[in-house]
Length: 332
Image 1 (cartoon, rainbow, N blue to C red):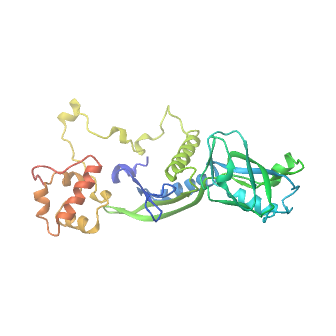
Image 2: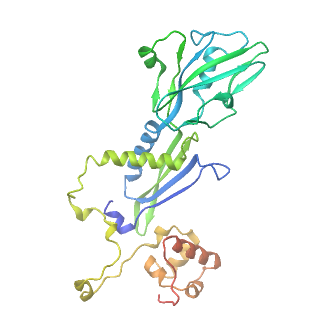
Image 3: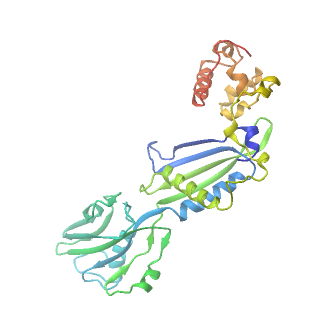
């Protein structure tokens, strides 16, 4: 990590639901900060590009239907044309567990509307939106379609596959494999102590449900990490003094350390992301670091001007998230 992180502390990563109901795993808003200058745009742009282009998903790649030789054909007893049916199959939301292609079928007699739940699939494929409409049959209508489902990444145009396999009656469909439907990132200014040039990255991610938003972000970060490892060597670290190493955090007593005076560490209290009212009350009382805060007792904090029960609960909860707690005796 950047050497600045030793000064401002580790960045805090959080995720909250982006949906209206609050329990939608397919839509999340992720935040990470504080970050060194320029890192918000660097990380956000890289994550957005990978999320949109490189995550695996399932899609319909072709169909074969009795009575249709090309997508512009109309069939008696079916309200939709071949191209309408192809477009409806293109927007199917599927989850496929195996990477091998599979042929599923759709059969039915009219009158009525056939939806995704009418597809005959194996245990390898899960229909994520059973109510998705595919076609409408009239009273005399009858249909049987063979549909090819594949797992892949990115976008696969029908024209490219048509050049490789131009079979009579086989209609290729543009396939969008990516399970990510939306990625938006925003970089905001952040402050820790006297440093006002820091950044906070917000990443808004929405998927079709075949992957959760958190799984999508995890996959993208792991993919980027695998590429970046080609640039570095684990055997030697160049200019190690300018790379933060938090694995060395925590004092380990040595003979030299015990003899020499130890300088007390100072971690700015701003990185705890307290509400403005709580933060101002602490700073006005002279508590500017996490180390100073953990030396305070609940009774001592209650004596601070503008510091009430709600602020005390906020402090206790925030410290508990980091494995810290207030002191039993006021030592400030």
